[in-house]
Structure formats: structure tokens, C-alpha cells
Length: 138
Image 1 (cartoon, rainbow, N blue to C red):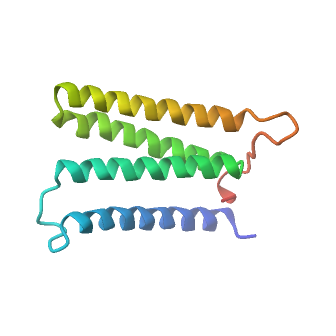
Image 2 (cartoon, rainbow, N blue to C red):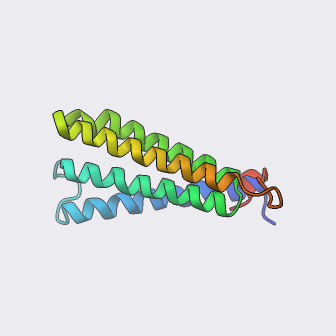
């Protein structure tokens, strides 16, 4: 068993490197020759949001399957940041029907996540409900 600060440091570093890898991969798909010089397009912004949302939902599912409170908290932070990005950045460029459809799509996604969370968390009483071990368990 490794010390808790060691495990937390490795987890934070791994998450940061994974985040950088995912973002640079998306950036490379949209402008393979100039990663910095090209402006970020609207489509690229939407792809970032979708991929980050998928990562947040994957963390939620992993946290529910492994009964890890820490992973569920991480997923809540990631999904919350994605929702803020969508509201503040992505929807600022949309108007009219596209903005309404975007709100509806985001709302349905959040309802689906809430349903999944409740469905997985409210199990029969014979199964363990939660593991409060925290950051030491991944």
C-alpha cells in the first residue's frame, strides 16, 4: 500500500497528462500543421465539450461500478465545468433555434446523467451503497 500523498500526486499528474493528451489530440485533428497559430473554430469548441462530457460520464460510471466516492466527485467537477463552458463559451455564439436546441440537448444529457446516477446509487439493500475510502482507492 502506497502512502496517500503519493497516490494523490500520481493521480493528479496522470489526470493532467491525460487532459493534455486529449486536448492536444483534438487540436491536432483540426489543425495538424499549426497547433498554436490557428484560431479555434466553433466545431472544435463543440468537440472539446462533447469529449469532456464523455470523460465526465465515464468517470461517473467508473465511480458507480467501483463504489468510489472520489471518482463520482471527480465526475461531478468535470461535468460541472463542461456545463459552465457550454453556457459561457459555446452558446454565446449561437442564436435562435440553434441556441434553443443546444439548451434542450444539454438539459436532456443532464437528466440522463441524473437518472443514471440515481438508478445505480439506489440498489437493493443487500449490496453495499458507498465506499468512503476516498482518494486512496481508484
